[in-house]
Amino acid sequence: MELGTVIDALYASEINCSITSFWDGGIVVKLGDVMNGFKAERECATAAEAAEFLDHAAREHYPESCYTLGKAEWERRNQGLKDRHKNN
Image 1: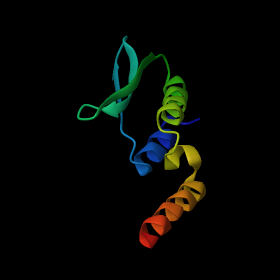
Image 2: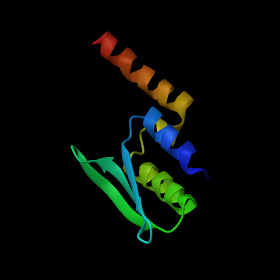
Image 3: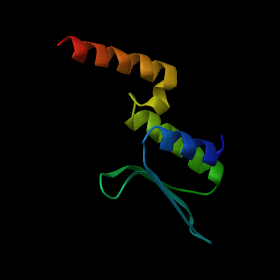
Image 4: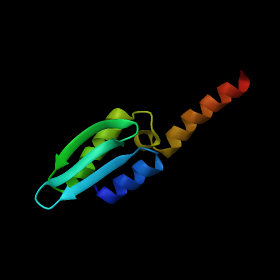
């Protein structure tokens, strides 16, 4: 799993994340943001570990997101919501 691929998919799903690194301090990965709060955080040794963490955390904390469900299922579910609101 590539870290860039995970970040791109989170971004497309409007899920925020933060990644910082410092030479001998590892890679600090956070799911969420300063304004809305962080849902999960971990210090990782590698980019691959950071990618795995972000993927797992996003699926756990955003189970109804496009990231977790996949675009087709997310759109199907959201179309159903739009149709119900239209009929009310």
